[in-house]
Structure formats: structure tokens, C-alpha cells
Amino acid sequence: MQGLKLVRWMSITSAKVPPTVGTIFRLARTFRETDIRHFVALTGDNNPIHVADNCDRHKEQLFVNGAFLNGVIAGIIGSNFPGFVVTTQNFRFPNRCQLDQEVRFSVTVEEMRKIVTVSYESKQHDRVVFEGTAKLFAVRK
Image 1 (cartoon, helix red, strand yellow):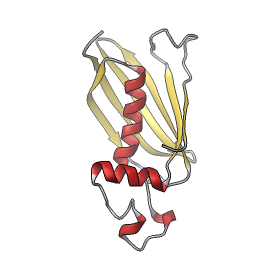
Image 2 (cartoon, helix red, strand yellow; image 1 turned 90 degrees about the vertical axis):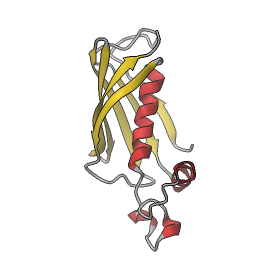
Image 3 (spheres, one colour; image 1 turned 90 degrees about the horizontal axis):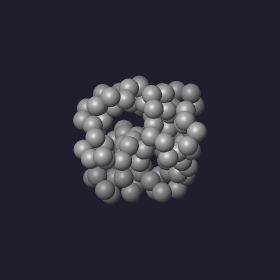
């Protein structure tokens, strides 16, 4: 996919050391129309609020699928917590996420116990477009 840029800021000095409370994982991503078309092809979600071909909307009026935003967060979590699964998740979409404009994703480790708690947020132009929390459980170590 185009526009993918992974940046990992951690509160610890070595990426080989497991995350601790306060560790923040960040990623910047710009969604293009081709990305949305691939997502639609995979999911079948051809809602006209996302795809220009299905309506008379201009590209500026389209916005990124919420499940796509959640998928990016899931990728950050899965890449940084191998062997863990998300057991619960609570999220909301307070603002629309526009195409062709950078989105900054961050996942923060809030608690490390038997169940790991993370919070996350996605911002576009300093406006939150997706935010939530998740609880992770290790299925293997």
C-alpha cells in the first residue's frame, strides 16, 4: 500500500526489550483512493461514502472506512505484541477521516499484567478521527 511509514517511538532504549507501561508505538499513514478500492474489494463494503464510483460525490467528500482505521491499529498492536490477541475493544469515531491527508496513529501501553491494556488514537490535522482502548491476552509466550 502506498504512503505507509512506520515510526516506532518507545520509552525504552532497545526495540528488543519488551514494551512497558508508557511505551508508545506510532505510525503515519496517508490513505489514497486505491487503498480504499483494495479495502472494498477485500471486504465488500462499497458504501458510497467511501467510493466515488458509486455516487456523484467528489473525492473531497469521501472518507476512510472506520474498519480500515481499526485495521491499522490492529496491525500496530499485532506487530508489537506477537502472540497476543485482542479480547475486548471499545472505540469511537468522533470525526471523519479524509483521503489524501496524513493520519497519525498512536498506541500507548497503559497496563501490563496478565491482560495488557492499551489506548489508541488516530488524528488528522490534530482532530481525533478514531480512538479507543483494547485489552490483550497472551495466547502463547
